[in-house]
Image 1 (cartoon, one colour):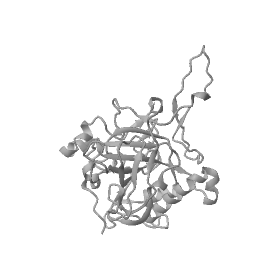
Image 2: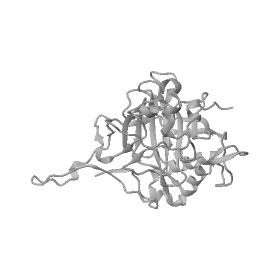
Image 3: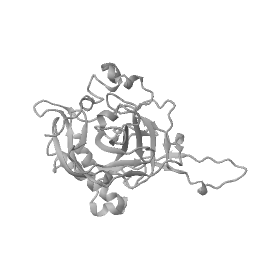
Length: 334
């Protein structure tokens, strides 16, 4: 029998169709007061024009080890947790991190449609979904339960999900680049393990789980070294402000069929079904006086300089077209 999901994970509630919306989390439990009083809350809207380039940011390192675990429908979220008896552990280091972090769990956020679905936004744009990889500070703390309350306790890597038109895998390499093919295959295989091999053949209800015998976290990451980072919080009740967020500057891709599989996951039991398990998205929170840093360096050499004319170099967000399968980056440097 797999390990139980912590109470904080089970009490995360969907935004629509429930009286206990994120706006009320801070009022429901005194231990969750940071949800309404905190000043370093997540998620946020990232404005490219306000990013700060930080040359001290290093490359992000994620171990290539494969791990085993279980993926659950908790009734509020789709969650993957590493088995305690897994043979290997995946360490996360580098980037903005001063310590070594051990990967522990994944939360998947999405909506019933493509209008919104990711928790983080880029220049106001919400992707159809967002995968969040969480790890705890293994140098200072024993586990996630301890680390989420502590300073620099948690790292969260955010991967945006972008929809593309249905493609034949024989053609996908030419459209998206050979380096993206393994990421898509891994993601597709991972979802099918949980939702079934025949799309739409069955609904997945609360309490359902699937065994993931071998999962490479490294293979989930898009082929880019570019990211944005800021100090924030968990996005579920508790909202502890102990998280270093790393938003990868390239999405992973899913077809309409794959997103349909996610949107076919249900709340409630098979005997007492409820609404689809979607819209599990916390609204964006105020940035206040926080700085969002990036390792994306603007190439000033491409700018024609003139002594008599001032010039402006800035980051700019892509304009996403849901039918454009050749778009690659969530943000461009201009």
